[in-house]
Length: 271
Image (cartoon, rainbow, N blue to C red; front, side):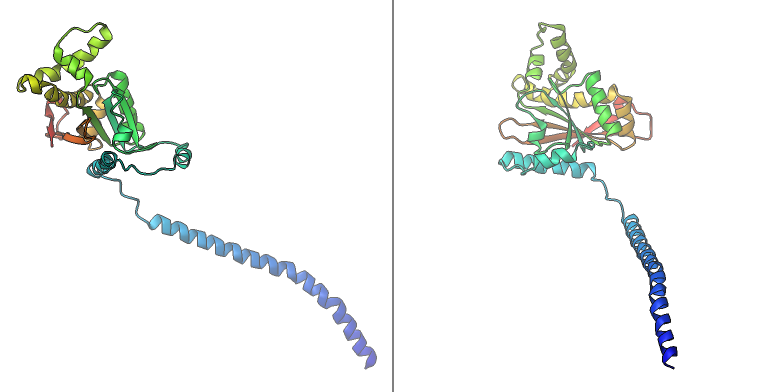
């Protein structure tokens, strides 16, 4: 019996550790597989949850305009938003998605980013004397609408505009380039002169020039015509007041009947 007990002890001492060693990797591998399956299931659940969430609704043109006005109120009150430009700059390295295109005058007193209290990546700005656009300016605006997905265009004039003031004199300019600016503003001056008295001609011409500039954009751009007709573009007209700092909305261009082929005569300005 003594020898039998010793033999059993010997066998247990030899085989049990071996069995344990052989099974341990298998058990560990199986545990890892279960853990990986659990992780995969968790990830799938997260993905499903994300897909189930509705996409964020884009702001309407009127909501975007309201946001611009909120920024202008901050500008007027001298309380602009505090911004971390370093972090914001880095976040925009991969691309831009401005919500608004602004066609504004080159006047140094009228920087759209400041007037609307906006920052890097917020506005796509095109500026020229008299807030008018030639082919290059129109192409720039088309780029924002077509490729950046911008759906709001603001044509921004301002009080005491030097270009409109010069156009109101009806004098011939010293160079062909300056005369080209006058020629593009002249129709607005002609229209304003039909109802405005001399002391009110400049202000009337400034407003008419904003409207004329917006309509000129559409008249010479099939891209913008199509976007307006399809409801993918809203055009606001506005005038900046130099002394108060306020931006006044003077109108919005709409199609009288978008069911028909676009013609410049079908576009009207509404408040």
